[in-house]
Image (cartoon, rainbow, N blue to C red):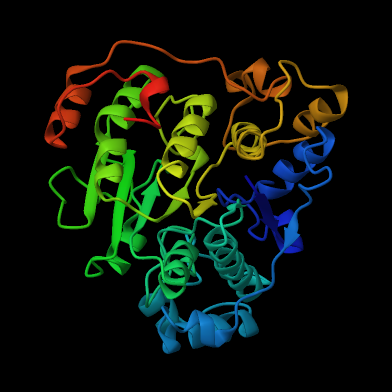
Amino acid sequence: MTTHFITAACFRQTGYSGNHPLAIPRVGTVERLCAALGWFGPGHAPLECLPASRAEIARFHAPDYIDAICRAEAAGGASAEDRARYQIGTLENPVFEGLWHRAAVSVGGAILAARLAHRGAVAFHPGGGAHHGLRERASGFCFFNDPVFAVQTLLDLGRARVLYVDLDAHHGDGVEIAFAQEPRVMTLSLHETGRWPFTGRIDDQAPGICNLPLPPRLNDSEFDAVIARAALPIGRAFAPDAVVVTVGADALKGDPLSSLAVSNTRLWAATEAFCALAPARVVLGGGGYNPWTLGRAWAGLWARLSGQAIPARLPAEAQAVLTSLDCDLVEEEDRDPDWFVTIADPETPGPVRREVEALIAAAGWAPRSGRMTEWATG
């Protein structure tokens, strides 16, 4: 199976600054870990993507919104009118130098990933996953919604049924809205209930839309059960010929902007199981605000997708990458010692609570075994 890691120089910088949750090293950490572990060897070298053109971006985003971003970046800040109308220049969606380029490169990477996936590859674009962006305004740290462009490109290339799966801790509202009237697309979002943007309730369902809101402190046993007994059967029933997965690292135990407790090994397994549903596969990044859990999760995901061994304990060079990180959102006493010496998390098994069983039942699928070995085959 051919795999591609898609990146660009701008993703090696944070872009955001100050106390913004995205002002942490993300893709740069992933790349440094992969390089230290030899995971960018022959046949696995990263592909550098180019920014999407204005014309490409305007296929989804409104021209006046695009103009507003250009104005704001040129002026070093948004006007009061543009801030109110387009939600740019806010604490949530700040204007910074290189904003247009970074957002356009994210879209360009998603388009490239879709083209490579259409040829039969698995394309991993960790700098993507800006799933909250709306057609006419920014939202939730997201300016241009690159997952929309990945799905759109697959449709343009002739894919008949595209399954979009969102494993981020926050509801993939922007992608759901974008394709709500498109019968060739199903959006399936697993996210923490009661978490911003406070959408994606269990009763927010329609043809082509499925939401599975997860309770706080979700453990691995519960995550496995929801995937095996609800999410995968729903995705399989759609019979997709292409899959786009956003793998937010904020669903992991230790993330400061969610209270789920999933281990990265289960997130990897779920991603692989959804990728097994179709011959064209795009995997995007997404949220994640703990640099240690995010870096380890996405680096390990690349190893799994590209068939490379993950060591039980990291060599000194890889440990040095992790010890060099810092984050104001994660207190020192909350930093797990394993984050500095391993890639794979220990699993977090536990009882499957009644609210999780109720969620599975509400999804309309009969109870089945949640063992991972059954995921890819049904």
